[in-house]
Image 1 (cartoon, one colour):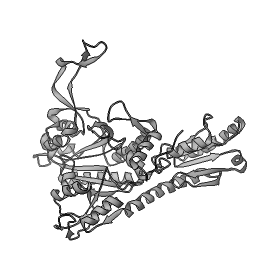
Image 2 (image 1 turned 90 degrees about the vertical axis):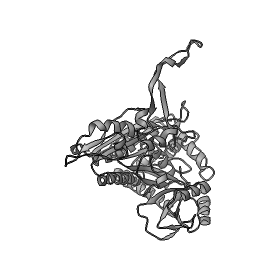
Image 3 (image 1 turned 120 degrees about the horizontal axis):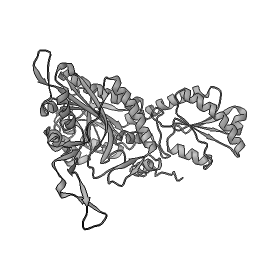
Length: 492
């Protein structure tokens, strides 16, 4: 197996693409711009889903499912949302094919099967969901309505990249309805907290919580709350967003409820989502030139055991011992794999699991059986140690916790070292071009300045941090007054 990757320092983009493919996470498909998520990559997504789904349900949300296809008239009902996604939409215009009379065995679109109304393949589901909510919500007793959907969406992308930007991707999207503005804002910020909790405590990926500027908001939202992470190449990744939609969608679809005073009024709304781009974020936050580095809480395989043997008799003896170790680990809730394949040598297996980012590797041979020891190798530090088999299950649980904490600390140290305060535009450009990372700079609050900085540097305002301090200053570009610093960065 050829596991050698391009070094990150040589070509970060190439390293990333090679790693996704060589680690068997995903590959390009026969459909341009779409990917096939392979079993190992999908196992990571399943672990993410499992954790997030539990977090959503703990905060009172229920899962439902809505149609993939949205009538164009519904899609365009909320004008800002429709305008924002119009150029990314795939559209169904016909409902049938027929045999091509001029080309045996081939098919053509049946011109007589044109739909009366075009159907949009959902780029997001607000339209179809809010048209449905109209029948679900009548009274204040029906509120709050807290619904989540696990689904796929299509956004027609011309330049794609596995996990980070594909024409079709998997995600979850929450859509909630509330009786008051205060409740809706509380919901939007609560879900931002859920996403931040997941990113930091499960992905071991530090994030900055903030709000988007008006030009960066979700189309149709009054406010967009975001969590922003920093990748190893100094670029930012928007890792999750939560939107306060006001009454925009309720008014567009006339979703009203009778309040406690008997008056009719439109509900307040939110939507929020994260997608398979989180797998890209996981890769770029932790992995190295040898392959993936996965946090134990999301790793499909937390521990792999590789036997070292010369003959069948030795393998049999090792297997008997390992059976007991596997049971002890599984009883502790540890995901463990015993790789007893006789088709590959131990060195090949070591390279494979290093590439796949398995947090802990155990090697055990005849001498270990005699001494009652085994070799433990950590993926995060690449260190090895010989330890006693006695109490190995507790040792491994402790080590997995240490690895999780270490990965977060390492990523946070890198992130914090790459947050740079600047006072002038020349300084701004130097940091963006040479150091990268987040730039803390004063901004005059205008879209004109925001767009000009983006045009000149390719850096965008990632967010106005929730913990940003009120601080009188001067905009780095325009020289106009500013009340606080915002976070700029180049981004994925």
